[in-house]
Length: 200
Image 1: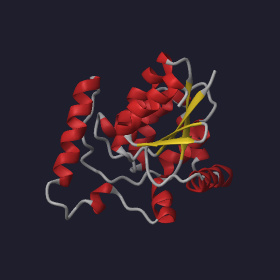
Image 2 (image 1 turned 90 degrees about the vertical axis):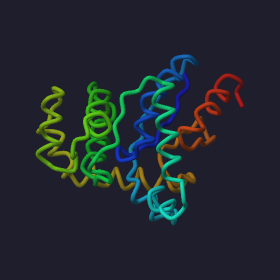
Image 3 (image 1 turned 180 degrees about the horizontal axis):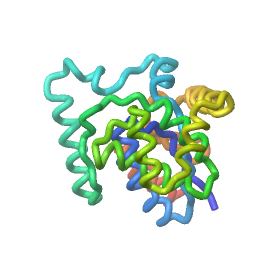
């Protein structure tokens, strides 16, 4: 079975939307999705990029259009979504938790719990107490995850994952790879699916 590598940061609303749609695409084509955590701030710095909020702030109508595009995408795919009132969030601990979760039997539960807390329930997930409460409510090993976010090994793994993403040409999130072929953003999902169907 092949795989789609999904490079993400919880702080990206478009990463959440792709997280919801990508499994269906993978199922239709008999491949799996492998979530690859990266720190978006580190990617932006290394790639000399900035968030869309900053880039388009002075472009009349651009941010309003971005919101409209999200509304259409959400409606088309039947996704529960609300813009987080605390955006932008510091996702450092959350992403370290994602690194620690890789390969665990509860990895999917962790990803869903954190994404939902931010983009469905509007929680302030860069508050340590909120983070811990969300983990406990999801039945996750909260104490172990929180301890791991302070681990030098996990910190190093997230740095390495971020650096590896930049080395592959990644400049933002969400980014998907099929082998060496890169697809950026939710608008690239039809192209990704076409590539899966035809082999490129």
